[in-house]
Image (cartoon, rainbow, N blue to C red; front, side, top):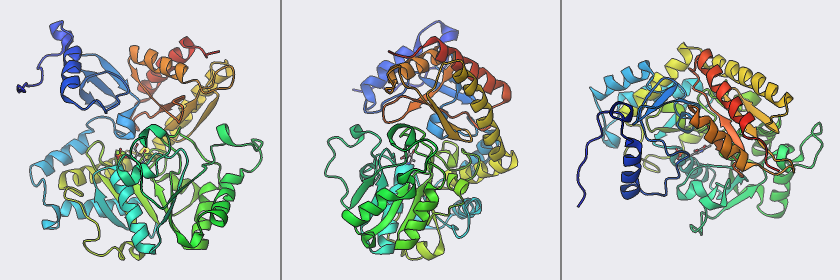
Length: 447
Ligand SMILES: Cc1ncc(COP(=O)(O)O)c(C=O)c1O
């Protein structure tokens, strides 16, 4: 029989015990081990740019809970808004309206370009991707959906059906959602034949035109779903013009363009939406991750033209738009504006790039450095030009041992992704980069 246990009150450093090991044992017994954790840390608190484990060890957090805690942990203004809401109202669902949801919807609409002004709230990224696909099918009366190879859109059935960053995410779940076609993403560093200074045919839309001509007529396509920068797939920044070409192709064929900005949105790239870098206005945008600073919330944003055709009851959620998460959304967007964090994201990106270019000039790698704003990917290849996942694993491990949490990503797990909080101080950023540089230089390339 399970016994109820309360969390330890003291940290290991105070008691001289290894509490992390105890928690790990308990986790193995009671928590589904399908959770694939990046580290075996057992974190008990977070503040600003740092997290602390149950044994009192502190880590600089450049993982941000996978692009979620962009304001650092427990930003005081968000904490205050959440506390205020907790003292007032937690839940109504669709039994009534709630003012916190309306206010958050207005605030989300205010950061999106015209005519994106109507918002549906759900609880996660996968859920808003699912909702966006349903909306596109309902609106167009067509069933075809085009997604990109290497994309990650979530774990639920619809979302995993458009996810191809790793076959492991799809293994054993088929048949997946029908009507989906996967087409190449312009990942020029790895998969394109053209010279670096030549235009990329994939970015120009050549593969899509072939798909329409040979496989799925454009007139049967409801939506093209795209990440403006591929996230889990490797922080892949497509060539300039790619999104504009998708916009043109969608307009030409009456297809809806859905930008999945779950990872790129809410200021991470230096703009509210990454699609703004190409002055592209999608028909539907999905947001989640950092939108609520760590409280679970996702949003589908679209125009009245599209959303008003989603009749009452055609979609819904018990918890979507719950007042506490919505209070966090409004406060999060206020903080980003008040503290000038869009500009800060750009500055952080510049500083990181300057530093990493210095390592590269010393021959430490990475082979490719890319990103926008504070969303930065470093792809490592070995001496034979093969993806060097082993080195990336070593770098992460070395950094962690020296107090820095960083993540990897990529179809081959050979990309370090740097996601400092947008609120990180200059000193914290320097500290993190020093640890990372030491790790990159300590763990040399394979082969
Ligand atoms: C672009 C993108 N879409 C959707 C998702 C799924 O979000 P969630 O894990 O909240 O369901 C993710 C998660 O990493 C993502 O990066």
